[in-house]
Image (cartoon, rainbow, N blue to C red; front, side, top):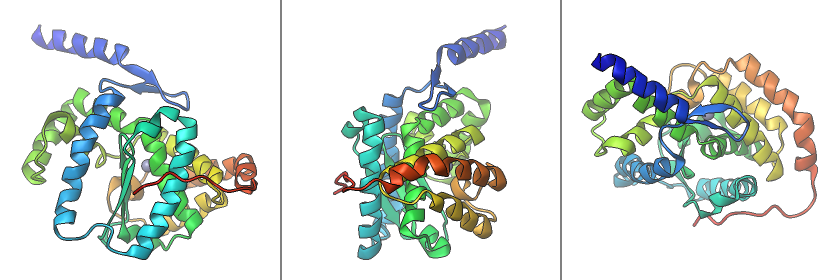
Length: 268
Ligand SMILES: [Zn+2]
C-alpha cells in the first residue's frame, strides 16, 4: 500500500512537472531551473576545487584568450534567444587535463572545457565554437534541471547519489550533489540533438562556420572509445548526428555570412 501510494505520488509529480523545451520537446521537470541554477553554483565550485588546488585551471594564457573570446561571442547570441539569461553568472573554466576529451555545462551557464579535447581533437576556432555552442545549448534548454529531475525521480538516481558520495568524496549534498552528478550522466538522444541544433545556430550567429559542426563530430568519432559521457558516449549514433547537422547547414549559412561585428559577452 505504501509503495502504491509512493508510485501514485511520483506519477502525479511527473505529470505536473513536465515542461516544454525551447525546441518544443516535453521535459520532466521536478527540479525548477532556478533551483538547478542555485544548486549548480555550489556544485561548480566543488567540481573545480581539486583542479584549482593543483593550479590546473586556465593555465595557458593563449588558450584561455581563444576560448574566452569564442565563448563570449556565443553567449551574446544565447542572450538574444533567452534574454533573461543575461542575468546568469556565465562562466567557463579550462581544466588542465590532457587525457580527458570532454566539456560540460551546468544550469545557469557554468561551463568547463578540458585541455584533452583541444590537444586530441585539435579543433579549429569554428569547430571549438561548435563544442562550446553545444554546451551552451544544454544550458539554454535546461538539460541540467531535466537530468537532476530524472536523477531525483528514479531509484537509480538515488543509488547513484549513494555511490558518488562514497567514491567521489564531493562535499555536496541534496540538489547540489544532483547537479554535480547531472554533468556525469549521459544526455538523452533527444537532449543531444537539441544541443546540436542550438549550438550550430549560436555558432553561426556568432560568426563561426556551420560546416565545422560536421567536421568536429567526424573528428570526435575518430578519437572515440571509452570516456566521459558527454563527448565519447555512443549516442546519438554518429551517422545520424552527421546527417542532422548537415541538413541544418543551408539554413545556418545566412547567419554565418552576415556582415558586421559580432557582439561579445564579457567573461572576466
Ligand atoms: Zn551534449
